[in-house]
Image (cartoon, rainbow, N blue to C red; front, side):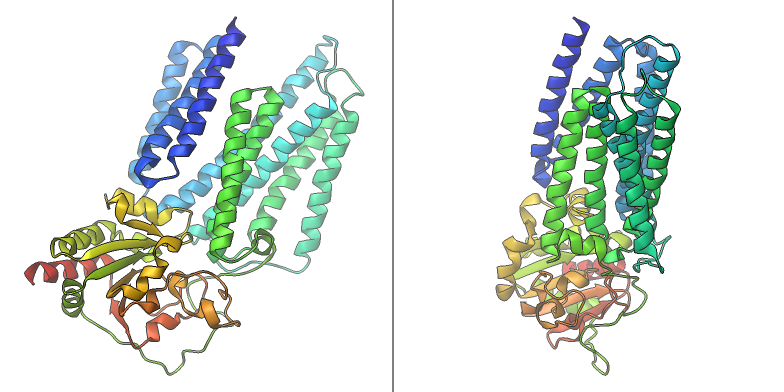
Length: 478
């Protein structure tokens, strides 16, 4: 009877997960989708703990209070610029949780063997599922925290490599495969589990931990959005493997959904960068924003046109159509609310205002959408790259706020550029483009932006929030 109730709860949870995922397709319903999925997971957890009598109602309530408290604290404490690394950290914790659950299952099976209760619970299937849970979980754990370091600039955004790194990676990969085969071969030797299997699990965990580091450190900072999406998929696959270990349908369903959606998102990001996933994983595109790397058209001797908030205000006030292009610089300056206020003032003057969002703008998938939603920018003003690119030809002013590589015309024609072939927003085709930046430092790909030197482009230097606020004040007076 209890197991039937648990299965019903898992079915309800699975339906809520699916509907929650469906609602994430649009910024307008994303919040509701998150809430549905969270409630679904709460139903699954409570059903498991209550009907299996693992915790008392008081203990469960205490866990909910502590978990919710941590969530509220992080939501209020972590700034929007810190969201990418927070997401990376969450992926890492999800991965290590799966590995620890698999380890706990091994401990349970060892106790079963010590008690000599008879039977053989540790089959070849058990060995493979536990191995996958440990391996994927540990790769996700260490890989996510390397991504966390790169995103937070605690680790250089440049690809990091050393002599013999690929050979060492292959050695750890073979170790992981060998440990998995060893555990599967030993599965039927004894009732329960034995010490050689434990050693195999430890070797697997160590190999997975090193593989996570070795697979992520060679990837450049500009590819981090793809890596975060991929690691998110890994965390889901680890959870699904753990579900098979525990024979838990809720974990299998939720893990499979996260894994599949993460892979789809990873593919979308790769298409947006005109790169294959294999190219991202073994390549070294991207680097620090501290200086240009090799490749790309030389901009030596070229000059830029500087402008002022007063001149920008005049251009915007008398425009028919204005498109804002947000980037990571907007997140750093926390300028999203100021941008929304400016857009509202322009709309009052009859200006057609839209926002163009590139799939890889920012440091994680959907970074700009989250920022603009947090600032209450109307959802019907947000447009993806494919939807709005054709409109730049008929746009009077395109305002770029901290975006860089995703508006660089070199991606179209310069075969020596590391971003060649990457689809970009056609900002250079607007009648006038205005770029807000603190300085002329290159973007995350480490190359100069040709757009800055175009004759129809103007640079408004300074903090984006302060600059936008100054422009807004001038617009109000016109």
